Image 1 (cartoon, rainbow, N blue to C red):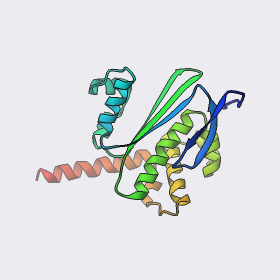
Image 2 (cartoon, rainbow, N blue to C red; image 1 turned 90 degrees about the vertical axis):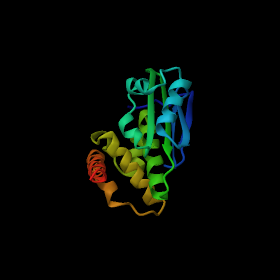
Image 3 (cartoon, rainbow, N blue to C red; image 1 turned 135 degrees about the vertical axis):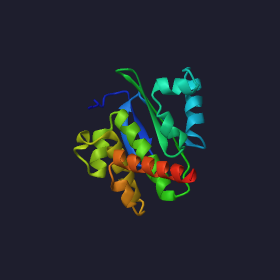
Image 4 (tube, rainbow, N blue to C red; image 1 turned 45 degrees about the vertical axis):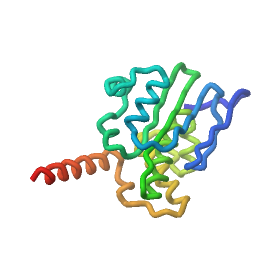
Amino acid sequence: MSLKFVKGNKAVYFPTLNFEGKVPRSYSFKDLGYTTSLIDSAKKWLKDNRYRCDEQGMVDFGFPVISMRKNRGGIHIAIDESPNVRISTIFYNHIEIPADNIFTRAHEEAHAAVHLGLGKKLAEMIGYANYENLDSEDFCDKAGVYTLGKNGLNVPSSLLVPHKRRLEIVENSMAVAAHNEHL
């Protein structure tokens, strides 16, 4: 998507990515910060925004409830109220490992930047000009990896695996651990 920068635009800043862009005034970005529970924060967000705020409401809204129960990572909520009104909200768990924290925050900020029409500019900054050809999760992972590098932090090799495959690996290891627990 391309934005026309006309009178009435405003700057939006993504602190972890250290990235700024201009969006129409009718667009908004909210970073709700760290949470101790992705589920509880999602329910609170639903309630605050007058949606059904129980677990079924979460499913109906499209939250990935099963993965949220693991309480790791972050969430990006993308709302398109009309063609001219977009709202992006993020929140995330505090993770004990600083690199994981930075990666998660940068990943969620990247989702918001793309939703608000800043994907091309972000892609140019991180060196992925053809970002439209990447899966959105993989692009946001690349933004997280870029941010780790800019902060002088080592990039775990696991982050270089495509997002979908990484989730499969985690799911399999959790299944094995659950199975071994019952032995």
